[in-house]
Each structure stands twice: as structure tokens, then as C-alpha cells.
Image 1 (cartoon, rainbow, N blue to C red):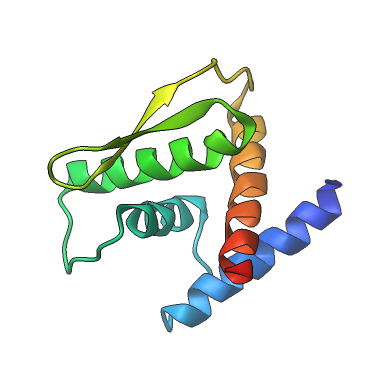
Image 2 (tube, one colour):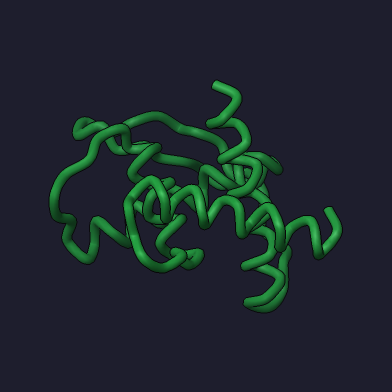
Length: 116
């Protein structure tokens, strides 16, 4: 995907999330990851602890990177939280490259949601 395509599609994802939640500003990557984590958990609650928020973002990262075979779904624990196992190490270097990869995969994730 070319840079301009990613920028355009990432902006579309951010607008969809903003509109869905009736916000005034566009969400950043962390907010999108948090929402993907909630989606993957399969249930919403009014408040999450700091640790739960971190866990939700971790779930989202694992889910997104599972597209490229870095992680695979291992199942759910007794509380229903999804768990992933590492299949191969992620070789991206630097924050910008990591963010780009996550944005590309978030775009892919939202495309799949629309197709369902």
C-alpha cells in the first residue's frame, strides 16, 4: 500500500470511529487499538482499569498482527478474555514503522468488519 493510500484509508477509519461514538475529534492509534480490543473481547463495560485498558490494547495488537502470522489465537480464558501466542518475532524497527504496520492492519480489520 502506498503512503497516500494508507493515509487516506487510515483517515477514513478514524472518521468512522469518531462518528460512531459521536466525538468531536478524531481518535488516535491508541484509541482505535482500545476499541478493537473491546470488539475482540466481545463485551463492553462502562469503565476499565488501567491494566484492563493495556490488556485490551495488547489484544488488539495481537489480533492485528495475526494477519501476517506473527501471532495466533490460542483461546479464551475462564473470564472470556482472548489470548494469543507468538508464532514469530516482529521485525519492524522504530516507532514510525511499527505505527505504520498497525495502521495498515487496522485498516484491514475495519474493511473486514464492513464486509461482515
